[in-house]
Length: 264
Image 1 (cartoon, rainbow, N blue to C red):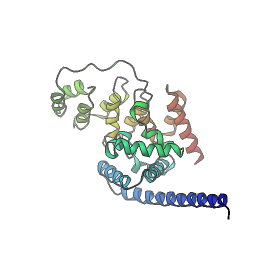
Image 2 (image 1 turned 30 degrees about the vertical axis):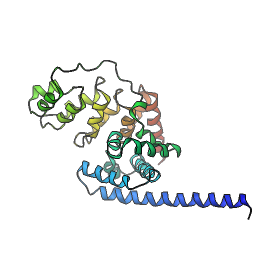
Image 3 (image 1 turned 180 degrees about the vertical axis):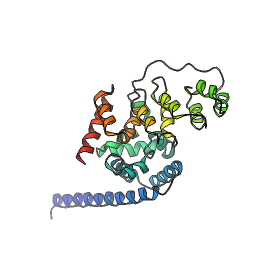
Image 4 (image 1 turned 180 degrees about the horizontal axis):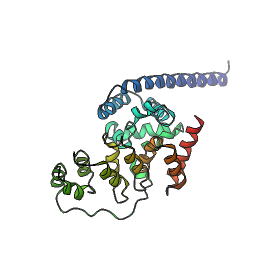
């Protein structure tokens, strides 16, 4: 056997071994999703998921995320429900670290995985929100956070559109907050990207369909956040995004997702 033949054989063996590893990771991921389905608390579910990712190499972590994204886009309703929140880009970055997540994203992008866009850093987002921003409140942020905990309606109305994500995170846990309040904030083009991401990270509110729809239709929402929510839209709403979103990248992702769903 000459050198060229040996090289082809070695490459073929390497390709086979990698395919076998990816198949095994896919089976492991499916078993993990079944396990996560028994965890009712969304935060605990996400913690267990990221523990699983930390035990993997960047390539394997990329395969896990790609498999989850596949289940989100074309999986059954129960599986998609389990996956809701697992692919939140900012939470993954906070949990796994920017450097590690960027390495994983590079692996996914090199292999042409559609889910790679979810891991894009904020600096690469194409946000089309208004230039107008919410005026900065006069009170220190600590005082506003303290006020946001109080179940007083007039305080909620004043602080709901606070530009600081820490204040909004506190308000989202206020028992007097209504779905209508959260939808109004999720749809606001004046809301900062990190504020909108805080809404998406809240396990109580992101399960509400009107909230998801408002975030997905908000031109101010980071692109990676919108892409992560598109699979959770009803078919007619996804078609509306594909046809009328002012953002070409979002329209393209919505069209690709529709094609994948119709072809599944």
